[in-house]
Every structure is written in structure tokens, then in C-alpha cells.
Length: 105
Image (cartoon, rainbow, N blue to C red; front, side):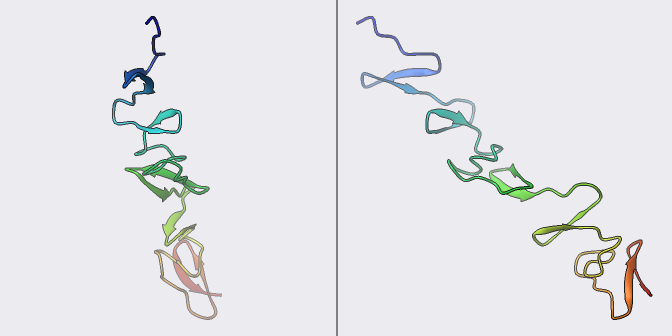
């Protein structure tokens, strides 16, 4: 008698336990949103890599600074000869990518 549980805990079978609400999941000793938490993306302990964010429970690459996601990397389609203008559009020999178009050197 007289033993109370702490904030965010409930008493179940004589034990104080963490109660996760609002769509959160218990990971260790805290509640996390596995839909958006990059350290627990889609499940406890599933961390996203560098440059990735957690969205809808999956890690995804986010490209910034005017770059475009091509496969698993970010490229500048205005100057990348392997992705000129769009992903996979390769410039031919003797050409460079300028303003997103293959041009002769």
C-alpha cells in the first residue's frame, strides 16, 4: 500500500510499467514515434543512415542544395555527366554536362 507509479506509468500485475500512448512504441525505457524517429525508424533500434530521414516508418535519402536523388545518392543533374538533365542520362564521349544538357567540349 502507498506505492504509486511515476508519471507516464501504469500499474499492471503489481508492477509499474511505462505506458506509451498516441501511436508511440516502447523502446527500452522511453516511448518513441517509430514512424518519424530516425533512431528507431519502423522499429526499435533501427537507425537511419547519415543524410536520411524517417518518414512513414522507412528511412529515405533527402537531397538538398538543388541536388536530385538518383538511386542511393544525390547528384547535380545540371553538371553530372552520368545523370545529365535526369537520372541515368549519360553524356557521350567528348561531352560534358552543362545546364542539364550534354554538349561537346
